[in-house]
Length: 391
Image (cartoon, rainbow, N blue to C red; front, side):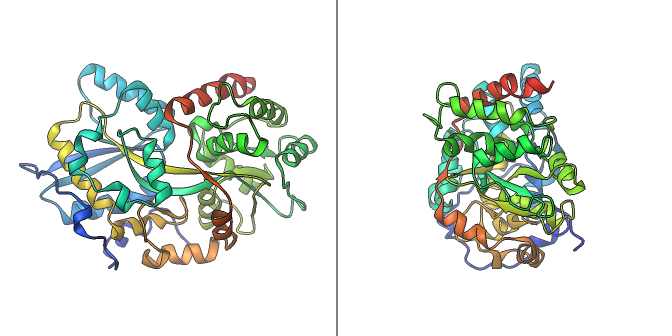
């Protein structure tokens, strides 16, 4: 199938979707005097899921937004860039789409506006979000809004022709890496969804004393990652390299998530026959993408952005988030089913999705990621104790 993450989203906005939530759940923001241009920076790959939503808004509400300008950047680099713009008094990024990484860094540094003051202009998030997505909303500390959600991982992905008997426990994975040096890979957690999901999932797998405290409660995790690192050649700075090397045969097992399993196979980056495995005793570490607004954005644009957020959180737009499985399932709001998604999304999930995911999601615990300060601390410790050993 010839598909990219962007082939269908621009047309998906026109798909008629039943089951719209009552209008009372959504707010009405203040219309600008004249249409504004909104610049969006994506540091999470989120535009694969949401760009069609923004484009649909621009087409439908041309009296609010003249255009959206999209840019992309690595998550670790953006907070410094925003901070420099704020210090100079010239913020040229109006909205940031981020995972928990840059969200947490920005909360820690005080970069994002307090959306608590804008609750009357936002949807009733508790009413519209899936329960687990609403738990993820708590991590934003009123400084962001969940726009997409998935249970994530950690899972391992492997090529069955290379790995006849995949590891079923964390210890078996470590033993396998000792016997197959440089054949396992994951990316730097501060810039990788599967990397940070593995990092946060290990304390549950290993029975650490406090899975919520990387500094004092992860002794088994840091010991395990150090031992694992002895059998890893290097840590890529981003996730895409990991799956490129899996597809090319350089690596035989990688850390993965539901979306990073489905999407690279749909795109032909990884062979369709790749398999996934959960490790015994694992807990899902859920993940979400957030929309955050940097301090320094004009009041007029903030008002427009409130309207934009109301729009993209409606079920008709959320159905676009199924995409090509990149953040599977994807929608953050309740009752958005695959049959509401664009046909091409339905076809991808039918061909490359995995029936076992429904069972695994239903029958294994789901945990929220670390709180922002603890996540920043976990990244720092990993960089110093694990990543630094590879240069």
